Image (cartoon, protein in one colour):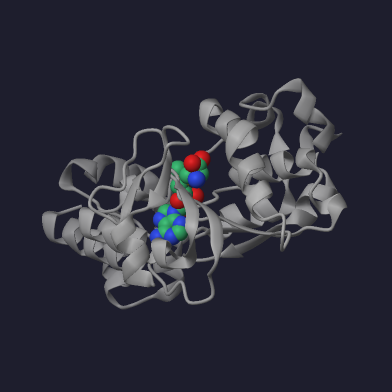
Length: 273
Ligand SMILES: C[S@@+](CC[C@H](N)C(=O)[O-])C[C@H]1O[C@@H](n2cnc3c(N)ncnc32)[C@H](O)[C@@H]1O
């Protein structure tokens, strides 16, 4: 892939999904796109890019899909999930006892491990049995990841990463795979959604998980996404980021709950009224 072709691809991916692709990622990009090249029957990368330049939507979709990193696991970052279980969720439930309503968004949910981990915690709290109205929305750019999440089927190696024996009662073995219990699947609404698109349909979020995705964006895109996430949240809502992520200059401040938890800053709350 020549420099012109690479920079065309980088611009296309930035526009379509916010991915920030630097020239040192050329070899990685070529490796990731090899299956797309074969699937669409191109002889080399130059002809694939030539076709992209003609605006072939299905090809651009496949290229975008191939470049997403869907790596995830159940209860990824155990300390954060412990804090959620032991302090954040009980406190939130106490604060919302009046209207018995909770809204949670897993904003880049990959194949659903994060959303099902949250669903397990909520299920253990027994809120649904007490008549709570819980919206657990899980979105991702990748159609393949969302299809896997909806199916709720995982390989043994995925189950072994992060799930303790106690949580295995939410999974049933089917041949070589594990199927998520229907009670958990009913709790989550999965939807294909690009974080670059309007968040108009998302509001009054108590918790927003936006973990291990912002690191693929450039600074301007990261700030824009975070500021718009703040708009979707209630004043005392919390944002959860990945272990090595921070909100930078966006309108959030570290929360006393612990590492990875962020509250809307005072200035943001005043700005949003
Ligand atoms: C590394 S996974 C993180 C999954 C999960 N949040 C976690 O922390 O384990 C990153 C996910 O972000 C998704 N993604 C990348 N760009 C996106 C965008 N513009 N809009 C929505 N999701 C995006 C990818 O498809 C991928 O599933």
